[in-house]
Image (cartoon, rainbow over all chains, first blue to last red; front, side):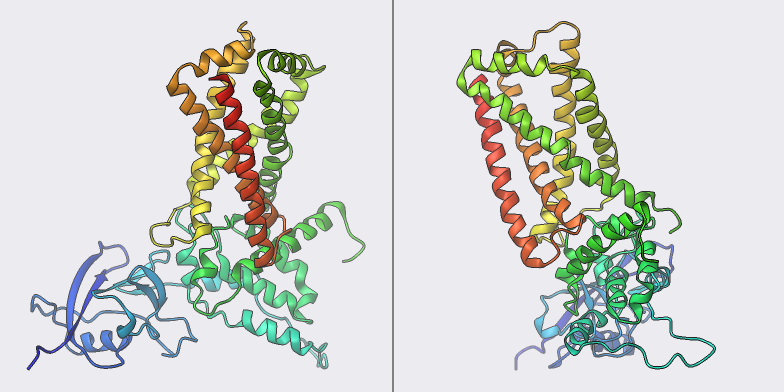
Length: 253
Length: 202
């Protein structure tokens, strides 16, 4: 009988946010339809390295397991992506797992993506409709535009575009592609458009839109296929016009 | 994100690279191509350019100050990037990296070129065909000039592409793709013009 098929994992681990990373290797018995998460669960069940040493289970984030929440992003064989949709059958072996180092590492493969949620607050990525009385129904959105906007709304704040961007790093405070594209989404909404200037002025601040260097890695890497660079270029046009309005004045508030 | 100096700085950086610095580059390469028509034609053209009224004022306002700003802010931009073409070998990411590399090479070349043809001229060296012939008789300098010129024309052509994106002119992927081809043609044409002129001196 042939030897049982195994899958080799090389995992970058880190015990503390400020401790040095190291790698550990694991061999798992192959099962059909394995993905990276099921493999990590298998290691958690029996955390023994290839050297036969018992180790601690690996820490990682996950939630929806169907590539809509963005929590389980990590660098798999050199490319950032979601581990839930990383099928072992489609990956070159050994499978190398690393955390997305653009973000602070909490432990092992777990990172802190708080900066992305802070950015969404900075750019006001919402539609303000709360008030002390009923404002009634808002303006309607054409169906064609709704379908277009739906593509932008697929962003799950997973952090892959920030990881891929050469201008998001410790030397710069660039907010990255994801929150910028959200500005385009909310400015396109008929009610959201009422706060368009506020959002544009927010991304014209330091660390904003102007930091984009057009490497266009983001649009190549986005797991949801969001046209991030088109969003950025469209916002470049909007902010050009907004800066003229700001400087030369406008008859519109 | 309190201030918005960065937005204004980046937009100014992008604009100055095209107008006036890029326009000057084209003018400079075109006037120098008189070298292809022989020593007399070149010397006549150089004499005409060198004796323009308000020359120093024109040079300062159109070349020195915009170029200085573009260079200083450009160094800052180049060194804030953390290049990752190894992991993400996409075409635009290569262009992103090359834009920064050619920017630094161009700066070194331009500083050297200014030293040879402007600062030494201020000390009495005569700027003419003979001077360029002397400089380029050294094969090392010839290669330095060829690399410098190609790096400059690349930086300008690719910078023109990102200027169109940064100012919101080319938004759709299709327009950005076509402007890649257009700027590629500009790069090849300007490189051919510059390198053939240099070889006319050598």
